[in-house]
Image (cartoon, rainbow, N blue to C red; front, top):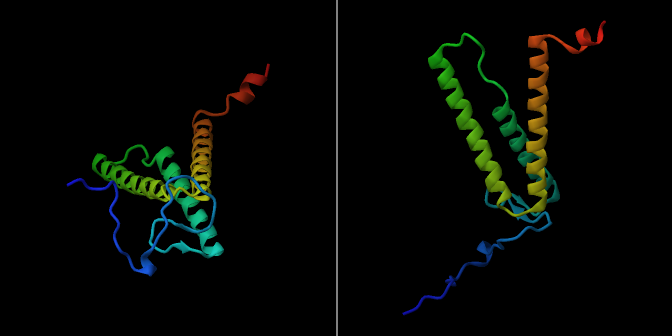
Length: 142
């Protein structure tokens, strides 16, 4: 007996859900939690900001040093492991949100990653300049 490629299961009317399998625009989306953000525009905008900040936080944790010199190796290892666990959790949440295939959510995630990377790298560049002193001003003097 051959099974069809899909299986129709009767479902109550309140459980019917449309699952998108390609990118689409619109506020009617389910992001991370069943029923959220629903069909309310305000909640959709909140979901966009939530995904944006999740992506930005993940990038900040990925690109900033966590430890200072002279840190106990055991404490340092535990701290780095905890930061890694939080960063990985944030990245998985962003990935699951993007899997809603909503273009607004996708754009919010990309912009969040981009801004987080920019902030982290510009902060690292400023720290490096402070640590080594500004060479630009000494090079321009005769």
